Length: 99
Image (cartoon, helix red, strand yellow):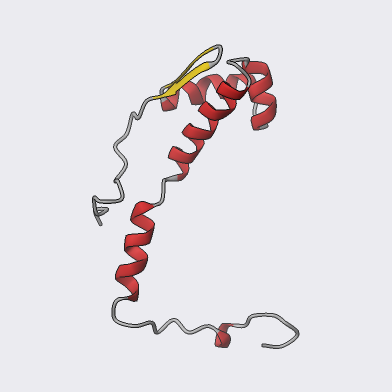
């Protein structure tokens, strides 16, 4: 390392035999970006008690975009009660992701 910067030669990518498998297992347990977005939209809508204008402002999107995302992700908000259905199947921690 020079000047506290990490350079290509400072990183070893030749891990042990099980390293790739361990990384695959780790990533299989992490939610997708779409799943995170769906849950966060639901969280913000619950926080704002279903007020779309306020939720859109917090999320940094146009109100029309928020409505579209709600339809896309199956998020329903009823002033204080927000649920998020799962329109697509996401692999769980115990289910291996398909290649």
